[in-house]
Image 1 (cartoon, rainbow, N blue to C red):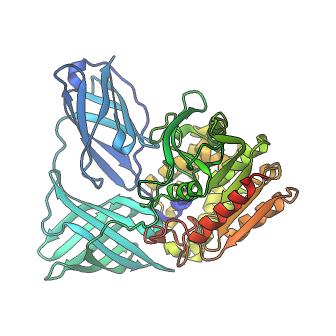
Image 2 (image 1 turned 120 degrees about the horizontal axis):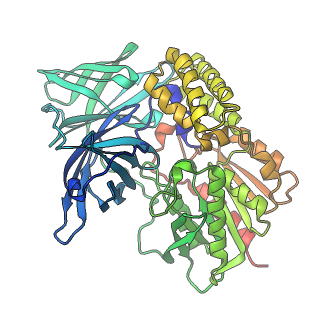
Length: 570
């Protein structure tokens, strides 16, 4: 279960690019060439977008897109097409697409930007205007504020480029990144900025050597915050495998539901086989085949270990993400089960795979998906659940809030209040005829009851959309235990004692009880490991990026040893 499912309680959200269709008018093809600009409105601030489209000498179009409010530089467009008053293009490097129609009255392209989710984006003619330049602050600044329960780290990134000086803020302990800061200003040694969506502001004084800013962060209450300039080197990830590998690797693709073709990687041990094989199933949110998160690639690490130990492994990009086709935003957990089953079917058709020894490994939400497939497919060789839920999801999310709250600086009273609001929001959705009605009901609850918790109307609206999606509504009413009881394949369930997202005791106890009639179930409690199966100080989500270890060796030993034992030919 990704932390994003409960992030509404802290009035901070990870920036994501989203939008919705608006269609109008018609345009001539030649109107597409030139400079265009727009804004994507997010709860944590507007992201400015600059698009440059050029006509190719031999016909067709090329282009680049850039946002000064996102770290990194501009990137090339692909598949730029103009036809029948429509402009479409893709941005492969960030897995994004744009679709819009020409609105003659507005003299603009009106449409949607899609990048895992959607949000409106209107592109108007003209070069994106540059903002003000603030001298002498470029770099990364880090500090911490004392919350009601724990300290919360703050990282401010300041960059000056052709669009002026921009500032972004991260709150790693809340897994909130890329929050746009507004009105950055410097008057001599005095520094200030604000973030209106979360009602926050900062004022401080830069030191004579330019290495620290001493001031206060105000968000209802003024709290001391000293920002120190740092040199943020690339994160070390010593477990990430380096080529050449001592095994074979193939780029593969296979069909799932109509319109869904999944792209992935199959790793095969040396020799002819046939080999036992595992299909890896990712957790919540759009994930690539390596389940990449904060520089970690846990599925790549797991696949490498298993393949070295004689197990073929298939991992794939989620539908609508990476190189896979389909619409992730509209997919339900049951759709991901269809995709995983398609992966199993693909492997069984290969002569180098032993069809009787194909199994599933699901992490987090993937631990819900794997039993869905196994309950219908009695020929599966094994099922491995890594930090998978074993209790009703409403109860898991409630436990998650209680576990994560202290590390996010949220006190017991605020947690209790947020749980009450959540309960009311879920109750309001019951009986809703569709997502739109559910969204309206939730928005009304969050707007009315969230204000005392510091939830702004913009954040309430964004979170109402998340909570009312078909995927989320399905999760909130799902109990995995009846499905687990139907699984007859051997099961390994692994969780860490410091998992704060899918708490170990609640969920392993649930799996143990639900699978009591299965003769081959192994439950493993690994002390000191978090939700990603890393060796962790506390298990707080803010530690994920700081920990160099991607998957603890004891977890890799447990997973590989059990699968090798259960797939050994007798």
